[in-house]
Length: 349
Image 1 (spheres, one colour):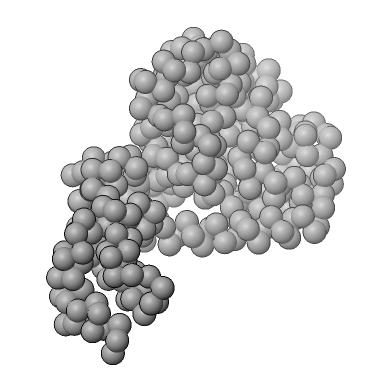
Image 2: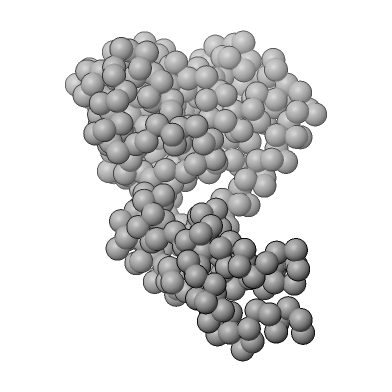
C-alpha cells in the first residue's frame, strides 16, 4: 500500500472523520447523472438532513459505502476523477473560502495543508520544493481507523483532480504537471487520467504526489482579498480548535445531552444513533475515556443544576424539567446526592 502517516498520539480505536461536504459533493454529482438519491440514502444509511449541517463530521465507513453505491449506480469506473473535475471550491465550505482569498498559489497550498482536517481527517496534504519542482503530496493517515487505507483509489483521484482544476479557477492559468503519482494499482484503462491531468500518470508508487514547476507558487490568485482571508482564517482556526476538543466522544455526548435534555433524559440509543455508532461501540469508546453514559449524564445534570439553582426566577419544578427528570422528587434525590442538601436549602443558603 505504500507509506502512510502514523500519528503516535492516536490510538487504533479512533476513527478518522470527514466533512459531510464530501458526501454532499458526491451526491450532487451523482444526482446530475440522473441517479435517484433515495435509493442511495436507503442503501448507505445516509440521512438527507445531515447534508444541511455544514459542520457535521461523518464516518469513513459511510463514505466507503457511498463511493461503492455511487460507482454502481452511475456505472462510472472513473467516478473519482470526474467528481474532482466538476469540483467547485465553495463545496468544501469554509476552507474553500480561505483558498479563494489567498494572495498567491504558494499560500493556497500552505492554507490547504494547515486546514485539511476541516474536511478530512483521513489525509494530510503537504508540499516541498526539490530541484526547482514542487512535490505536492497527499498522504493517507495511519494509526487510526481510516477507510482510505483499504479503498483509496476514487477519493485520492478525486482530491488530485479537484486540486488540478481548482488551480485553473484560482489563477486563470493551466497547471502543467511534470508527473502524477498514485499509490494504488493502475486501473485497466488509464485514458481518463491522461485526459484530465495532461501528463504522465504512474501507479503503484511510494506516495500520492503531483509534481510541477516551482514558478507556479508565485501565480496570483484572481479572487484574493486580504481582509476576507483574515476573517475566514479566524473562523477556520476556531473550528480546528473545536475539532480537536470534540474528538473526544465524551465531549460529543455532553453536547448532545445538553441539546436534548428537556422533560426527559435522552436515551443512550438516541445518542449512539446521532453519532452513527451502535450502543456497544459508544459504550466501548466511553470506557476507553474512563467514563460512561450514565456518569456523563449525571455530571452534566449536576453542572447545569448548580449553574441555575441560584436563579430564583427559575422554579425548582422547572429546573427539574430542564434537567430531564420526569418527577421533581427524582431531582430532589439527585441534588441531595450531589450537594448533601435539598435544592431549596441550597438556594436559601
